[in-house]
Image (cartoon, rainbow over all chains, first blue to last red; front, side, top):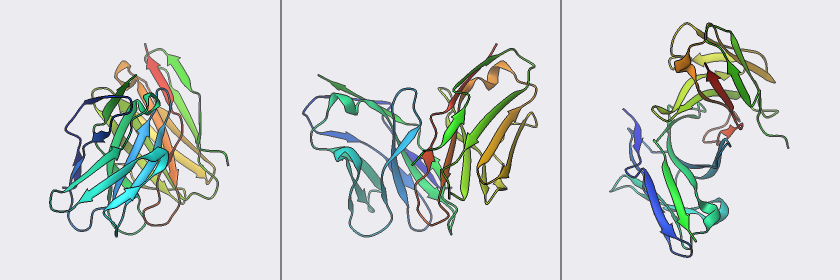
Length: 115
Length: 114
C-alpha cells in the first residue's frame, strides 16, 4: 500500500537556524510527492512537489525539499527559519495513474519557531 | 483569482439536525475533493469528483453522509442526521485535470455538533 510517514509530531527550532521536517514514503512505482503547509484556521497551501528530475526541489517561501530514492525520503528544508514559518506541515503522495491527483497525506508535523 | 470558497465557515447545531456544507471550486478545475480533519484521525479524504461525477466515495464514513456536485461550480456535503462525533473541520479542494497538479484548498467549515 502506498503511504507517507512523518515521524515527528513537532519540530522546534530557533529563528535563523536551519530547519528540517522529515517525510518518508512507501510507493509502488514512481513516487510523486508533495508538501503542504497549514496556518491556523486556514486550508492547506501547496508548497512544492517532486515529480521527476533534480532531487532538490525549490518551492514557496524559501522552502526546498530533497528527494532521496535510496532512503525513500522527501525531507522539507529551509536554510533560515522565521517565526512566521510556524505552522502545520503535511507531506503527501499521489495515488493512482493518469490525472487522478488523489493524495494521501501524512499525519502532519507542527513546526514551532522560537524568536 | 478567487480561491476555493466554502460556506459556512462555522456551523454549530444540535445532534439529529441536518447539516449542509457548501463549496465553490476554482473556475476551470475538473476535480473536487472533500476532506475531514480531526485531531484523532488527521486529514481524511471523504469523496472526490471528476467533471461532476463521483469517482471514489470509499472514505465516506456512513450512509448519513452524502455529497453532490450538480454543476462544475458547486458541491455540497450533507450529514443527516448529524452526531457529535461528526464534529470536525471539513475542507473542500479542487485541482486541474492534468497530472501532478496541486490541490487548492478552501479555508474549511468548522462543524460542531452538540
